[in-house]
Length: 135
Image (tube, rainbow, N blue to C red):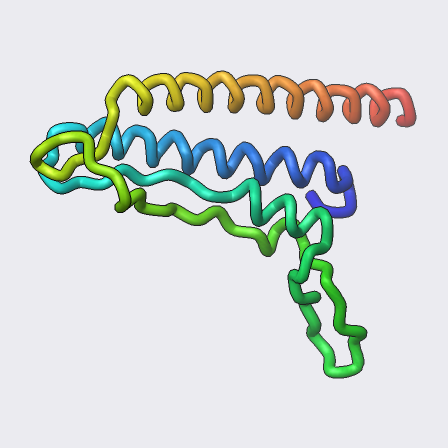
């Protein structure tokens, strides 16, 4: 997609991939709500993305020794990280999953994904209109 549709569509596609991963993590947390010593997990992505978009100290990907070194990276090089929240405990058995919180986060994430999907669909629809009018 890079180059053909631009950075916005590429970024939106990446955000949708992260949203799918988040949904899997929320489902995993919910499934383990009664598992002793289970620690909730969450997806970390936005801070790394912000740094990449602002060019903060991220090394440039160099494929040749004669390339200029700098602080640019491709959006595709930024990967979401699954982080375990070890610092808290909600129950005596060591589990820290709050089912209400996880359910709300999963629903918010689902709505966010639907909105991104609708926007992406409309964007591609506009490209289709342009292509049909050109040919």
